Length: 428
Image (cartoon, rainbow, N blue to C red; front, side, top):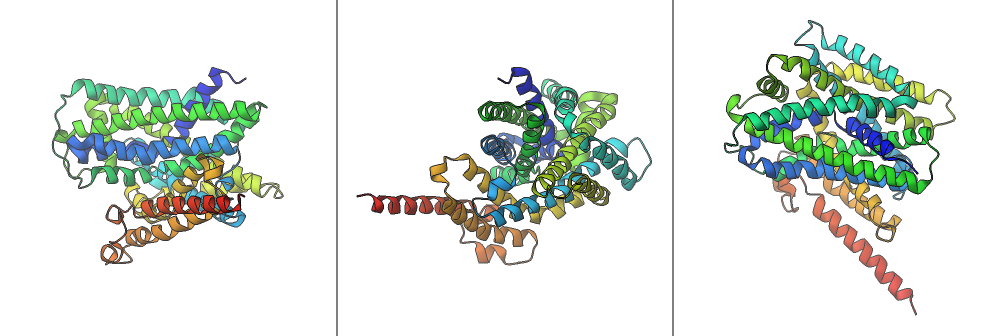
């Protein structure tokens, strides 16, 4: 049996792998812009940035394989293309973004060095950790995550106790859907299928426990990590909402986070915030590069140095993209997210529901429908179609850039109803 100590370490490791650049800089500005509707934007944000990722970890607990297993029921070829696409996006956008955030918040205020220099030093350290992946779970679970949580709780706690609960009106037209879409930018759903694989490999390196024991450990750790994420997100969004009167309405994400830290922690804010940002971003970058290298190693095991070469490529890409500013990387990431995120959410949900409701045929129908109805949002994010709203306005929820949801639900229901009717006809 796996003990509670292993559950706690795995929970902390999961939290630190999830909690990175986007998780830190996105919620405060959401709260700042939502004002008295902060609770509604929190529910939307938690849907895509907490609930779906936790379900992704539960799917990993069930599958105990790699990201390839998430899509293989559609077809092995699709599973491979999906996996490679996710890893390509992960090491090209969210991983480099961690270096960019670290430079803007934790390095630039103290040192007169270029963002390129920061990226080189940053991903050199990432490479060292990735190459020592057998110790990864203990390092993340025992050392780094407790430090992250303590600093976060200090900022949130001091804000809640020091400021009176008076809110101004928000500027968001649709707080709930805005929260959902902003949750995309955390990459947490994609992170779930990536870092979940890291956790599986790490557990397998540490223990030979049976399938059910590992399944229980991963499920429990997933829910606990999700609860911690929700509390931190809600706290950061509330913190942003309570600080509306203290900052200019045009403030940027990183400037707001820095400003809130100064309000709550005083003159020591920069030091604490620098430590927090560095730890939170670093653990996520390590998880992404490790997950990518793990997958390539497992799927292309005939290449002896597959893990090493993948780690090098991941870190080089991190250096090249990490030198750009955060706002630019977020803008570049949007089209990729509008396409890959709905597919990821659907694959997670299909892998969580009972097998009888998610046959290979159901997988094919639902995933194909999701892809088709994600195209308008993808094109719209590219501003490829100026008349996007007029052309695709008939699709339910399309005005919220969530036009894929209802068609996917309908496809799931029809595919299962058709399957059940065929089964009934075969019965005597």
